[in-house]
Length: 204
Image (cartoon, rainbow, N blue to C red; front, side, top):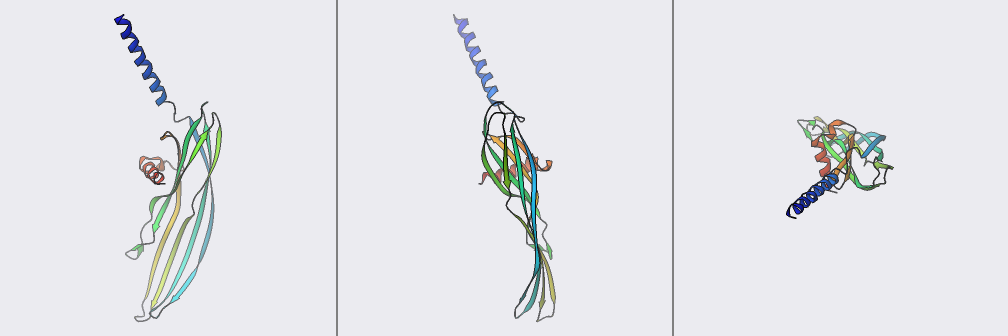
């Protein structure tokens, strides 16, 4: 009788471990796939603005470019079970602050842009289409020529302000685990950018 109970206890433990292992592997990287098509719209504006004061006469020449990007996403459930998850996204831009150093614009810095998320339910074996429209990427270049009346000198400064589109990252998560991810560039799927984008999304 004693040996029977020991054997039964071992079998129960092994069965429990098998169930836990199966649950941890229930969502594989290939269970959900994503495909993305990108479409963009752009608009340009340029002109000059003049401003005169008692001390100076300034002419500001500007050129502004505005771009909006649309991601057309197809999520495909490759399994015969339903998945409830969260579609998360983050765009990447070259961000210019408009500041200058040594009379030159400070170089643009890669940054996260327009993060977002949406709850998604994928039926067994189904494909689902989603559309994400970015916030406008607005980038402006300005050249300011100023004539100073007192000294007769003229100064010229250039400014660069705003964001230029560089790419996107998309995640589909189930129970907090990334099941599928895609980007326009492999560099944005490295850990550095994944962490930056997940941090930006988590602030929403």
